[in-house]
Every structure is written in structure tokens, then in C-alpha cells.
Amino acid sequence: MNISLVWIRNDLRLEDNTALIEAVKDADADDKILMVFCIDPKQLKTGSYSHDYFFTALNTFYRNCLEKELAIHFLYGDPQDCFSKLIKEFPDIQKIYFNIDDSGYGMVRDCAVRKILEESNVRILDFYDHHLHSANEVLKEDGSHYRVFTPYYNQWKNRLIRRVQKPDYDKLRKVILKNFAAKGEEGQNKFCEIQEMITTDFTVQTGEEKAQEILENFVERHLAEYEEMRDYPYTEGTSRISKFLSTGQLSIRQVYQRVEQAPNSKGKETFIKELGWRDFYNMIYHFYPKQKDEEIIEKYRNIRWEYDESRIEKWKEGKTGFPIVDAAMRQLKEEGWMHNRLRMIVASFFTKDLLMDWRIGEKYFSEMLIDYDSASNIGGWQWAASVGTDAVPYFRIFNPNSQSKRFDPEGSFIKKYVKELRNIPAKYIQEPFKYTKQIRKECGIDIEKIYDEPIVNHKKQRLRAIELFQR
Ligand SMILES: Cc1cc2nc3c(=O)[nH]c(=O)nc-3n(C[C@H](O)[C@H](O)[C@H](O)COP(=O)(O)OP(=O)(O)OC[C@H]3O[C@@H](n4cnc5c(N)ncnc54)[C@H](O)[C@@H]3O)c2cc1C
Image (cartoon, rainbow, N blue to C red; front, side):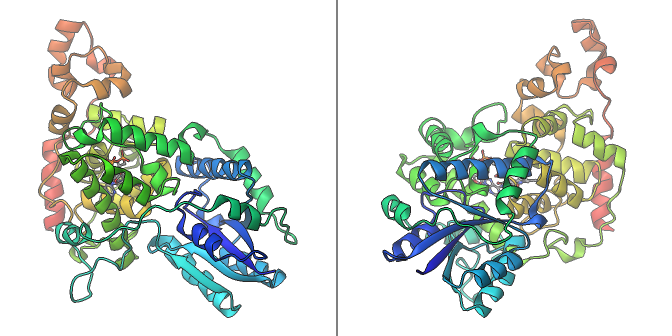
């Protein structure tokens, strides 16, 4: 009997899972497939939303497999050690299939595991799956990578995209290895232990079926208006599929193909462009592997960011006295998600108004976001801090109050999350401390008693931020 491993990672789905589908295609009648998930202690962030969401999604995937009479075997430990032990114990393991991680920790981990597998003569079959186009696929004519999005996108959008594939479930059921037990393996126990420690249950927001439902609803009802509505956080203007993409509960080709079938519209065009940004940031992270800790623009690597723990805490808690920032940060704390426009506003506020190091903000998001994706998160933070590739220029600083007036003109988003401001009229809600007298007179409310005063003066901080970059 030959055994092929299918190593599941951030691709928690059966449909259009390239590695799995190829393994099933290749299997002969007496071959066996063993689906494994390796719980890597380095990737555990117990107690954080991103951890809880990922492991809830893994549990949903596991249950979905069981329902379909399929099985996943859990390993626990450093992936190199886990695979090394497994291969020694089971010489029948001849091949391993997985979907490539071409940036970040995943890329480094895979490199190390590949070495072990090659030394043991296990055949590696790996596939590009997680992005529409991998990091090395869209390059300039001279073979170098792009640094600016528009020319990258112009080439990106003309490339062919593979069609969605379905696994052969009957064959998969026949070849899947169930009741597999390795000596001294603690993976299953660890998986159960992690499930018990989950503090926020995200079950209703997980699973392939749920992902399809959300995608379908978005394409049917909101895609055509995406261009006009995507910047307004109080509407359902965006798809909210990011959590399914980052965990692989939805394949990026399923998204693309469904969107392609929709009638042409400006919304459709803009939405596809956003998928291009996802690939762009992955490509950038591939070519700048130090980007999590280091600014891409060399001359900004020595910026002297300030450090004030109490201000950082106020930002995290949504108590900065800037209603739009506070509403956004409270949404993040309550739901583990934040609208893109707000991510830009709060990241800009953190770096240009509070003058704090973008790495601190990036780390906080990495724990709080249920859709955490290292390449997009680092890319977004370096963009907002003006230190990354194709970033916002340092002198174009968002004014949180003008952003708020523009994108939440009635203050409906603010009122949803900053409940103490729900009785403040729209005309005053963006900057309540500017209108204390009017609010007292018209509403009988002493704003000082119910809401925090702004922790910084935007105009002054703006100038200080510019100075920081010019030093
Ligand atoms: C500071 C900052 C941090 C961010 N961190 C993350 C993160 O950890 N994970 C994450 O998935 N996205 C991140 N983004 C990008 C973006 O905010 C989210 O992808 C988007 O808000 C998800 O909501 P949606 O699915 O409704 O997006 P939609 O507007 O419906 O877009 C569809 C999909 O396109 C992709 N996309 C859209 N905008 C971007 C973008 N600017 N960059 C990369 N991909 C994009 C996402 O996969 C998204 O799901 C970040 C942006 C900023 C400014």
C-alpha cells in the first residue's frame, strides 16, 4: 500500500482544494490518502480572536469531513519533527501533496519541511492555490518584481485563471485512510484541548457552505453597487468574505468565477481589482520577507516613532475622543472585523496622529482580526504609515473628522458602536467637543460627562508627523 499525505494548512475546504483534488486524481485503487493537519505551537495565539476564529473554522472543516465519511489526522509539534517522525514510522508514505505558501512564516516553514521530505525520498507535489496569481507569476519583462500596483495590475488582469474543480467524492471516500494511529501522537488531544480553550465561538461564521452563501448574497445584491458603496462602513457595501479567504474556506477561484458570471458593472471591475491587491501584497511579502519588522522604504527605517502606553491603550479601547476612530476600534473589539476604510483611518491615526510605531498596530490587528492575513495586514499598515511600497505619501495625512463627515455623514456607524453619542445630532457628532454649548443647549447633554476629550490635537500632530518624516 502506498500512502499519500495531503497536508491541510490555511486551505480549510474540500471544494476546489487543488492539492487534495490532485491527490485523489493520482490515487490508484490500492493507494491510500491520509489528510493531516499539523498544529504548530509557533502559530498558536491562544486567547486572540484570530486564533479562535481559525480553530473554530478548523473544527467546522473537521466536522464537515466526518459527515462526509472522511477523516483528518492531527499532528502536534514542530512540522519538521512531526513529518520526520511520521515518515520514519510509516515507510509506506511515498508522496505529500500541499498548496504552496509563498510568503511569510508559511514559506519559511515549508522550506524547512521540504528538506526533511527530500532527504527521506518522499515525493513532493505542491500547487499554487491560495492566490489567483502566485508571487512569481506576474513579473516585469526583465524578470524583476513590480513595486507599484497599477502596472502590476495591468498585467495581472490579463492572465488566465484556472477553472474551479470539484473533488471526486466517491473515490476520495474509498481511498481515505481512517482510524490512523501513530505511536505517541498527541495531535488529536491537542486539537480537543484547543477547542475547549476557545473563548469566542465563531461557529456561525465558518464553513464552506456559509462562505458560499455570503458570496452568493453579495454578488446577487451588492456587487453592482460595490464601486459606490464600498467606502461607507454603515452599509453592506463590501463582501465580508475576507475571513473565508484567509482561512481558505473559500477558494479564490470560486470567488473570481462567480463574480465573472455577474453582468458587467463598474462594481464588478473594482471588486476584481481588490482581489488584485490581495495578490499584490502577497507578492510584495514574498520579495520582502523581512517586511513584518522592517519598512520597505529604506530611508524611513530610522523614524523615531514615539511610545506612550496610555495612548496606545486608549486607541485599542476606542477611547481617543475621535468618534470615528473609537467606533471602528470598538467594532474590532466586539466583532474581530473592521471595514477597510476604517482600517485606513485608524492605522493613519495611530501612526500620524499618535506618532506610534506601525509595528505595534500591526501586531494588535494580527491578534484581533478574524480575517488576519499577514501579507495584507503588513501591506495595509506599511501603506498607512507611508513606509511601504506604493504607500500613501507621508504628507497626505487623513483628517479623521473629515473622513468621518465624508464616509459616515449621518453618524449612523458611530452611533452603533459609540453608544454614549447616540443622542447627539449628526451635525455635531463628528467633533462633539467643538460644539459643547450647542449640544448642551439643544440636547441638554454635557458632552464632557459622557465622552472622552480628544487625546491629541489633529492639526498639531499632523505637522509633527510631517516633521518626523523630514528629519
Ligand atoms: C491597516 C490595514 C490592515 C489590513 N489587514 C488585513 C488583514 O489582516 N486581512 C485581510 O484579508 N485584509 C486586510 N486588509 C485589507 C482590507 O481591509 C480587507 O481585506 C477588507 O476590509 C475585507 O473586507 P471584505 O471582505 O468585505 O472586502 P471587500 O471590499 O469585499 O474585498 C474583497 C476581497 O478583496 C481583498 N481585498 C480588499 N481590499 C484589500 C486590500 N486593501 N488589500 C488586500 N486585499 C484586499 C480581500 O481578500 C477582500 O476579502 C487590511 C487593510 C488595512 C488598511
